Amino acid sequence: MLRDALPKIKTTLPGPKAKAIIDRRGDAVPDAIKCPYPCVISRGEGAMFEDVDGNIFLDWVGGVGVLNIGYSHPELIEAVKEQSHKYFHAMMNIVTHEGYIELAEKMNQIIPVKGEKRKTMFVNSGAEAIENAVKIAKSFTKRPNIIVFSGAFHGRTLLASAMTSKKAYSSGIGPFPDGVYRAEFPYLFRGPTGYTEEETIAYYVEKFKKVFEEASPVDYVAAIVLEPVQGEGGFIPAPLEWVKAVRKICNENGILMIADEIQTGFARSGKMFVSNYWAEAGCAPDIITTAKSIAGGIPLSAVTASAEIFDGVKSGIIGGTFGGNALACASALKVIEIIERDNLCARSLEIENKCKERFNLWKENYEEVGDVRGIGCMMGIEFVTDKKSKNPNPKLVSDIISYATTKGLIVESAGNYSNVIRFLCPLVVTDAQLECGLQILQSAIETCR
Image (cartoon, rainbow, N blue to C red; front, side, top):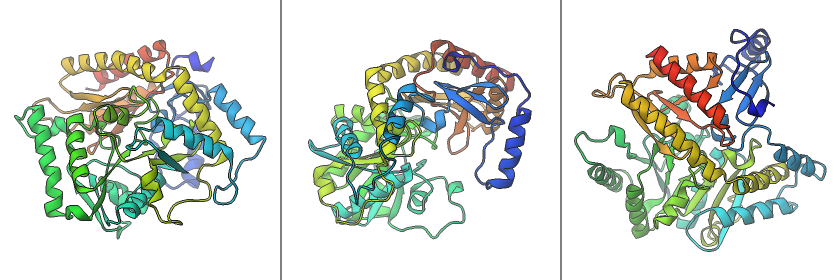
């Protein structure tokens, strides 16, 4: 079966069938929607996919965090098929459908936001969830401004683009909405030279406070929005002690904390959400946005907050045609059931232990491996020219990705300098597949360095 297979490349890449389709893509699809990988998927199972030429690839990107339970889970197929025989769609502003209610009840149970009674709304994409979370925060607090962070990625809609740090994602599409101010995210690897970790965190806390002096008065700030582990920014975890300090500042000033768990959620971190770790430490967020793996590949996203916050939102501000689509809700309910039943949080930590041991060995042995970081199965390897200068090495990363692809391993870059290789492998990967991928990646580093 494909789900148990190992990578196997039979043709040059792209193969003849893939090349024909990629050529059609060039004619029919905007060039701005880029894809550097010379393959065209035919079918996928587990952590593997086969292309139209019969080449088999191990996918360590997983749709950028969408496929935590893998491709084509048979129970997911049956759940969507069963729902499709009843109805595809019922708009929640017109006709209530029970799947939406059941999924909201489940999300309210598992999402670790502040407040005992919680409510959830559904939309379609991560960017939609972020935009709605900001609207909710502003409507509840009656304040106009938000604070985001360096390295942030929150989407490509107009507000989300303004919130996103890397301006390559939004070049030439302004003017942007106002009231968006940026603080410095705690990037420990590139923090002040000679500081201890404790001193570095204190430094970033003080940098955060500066925003109230230099950008927005504190009583104008509705919310801060942060990723518990920055994705596009380079797989940089927010240090827990920094989160505690920021949470305290928010509490003292009536500011809501919004955790963007779009990429970090659904067992990726070793818990259902990174915010579970925060809640255990007494610094749970007020609002959490989720998407990506929520429905195993069907478009769906969610915003969860306390009933108090949602009940403070004016009628008409939130909602939408396809939010909480019946097929997506059926899929999401099955995804959560599978994660919980099959202990995928524990599996995430098993994979982390295997990979981090190897990644750290590379850090010891290769001058170009500058940092290894992450939480659970969301890990990044940052490549530099040398450990002393820490100069980013995007060319090496590009070469590694190209080489790995020729051997049947799909990996992707991240970071402001495109010098980080991200690890988002489906949590259903087999041990044999994981070991094969590690061997390919090590061979790529040794060949390309």
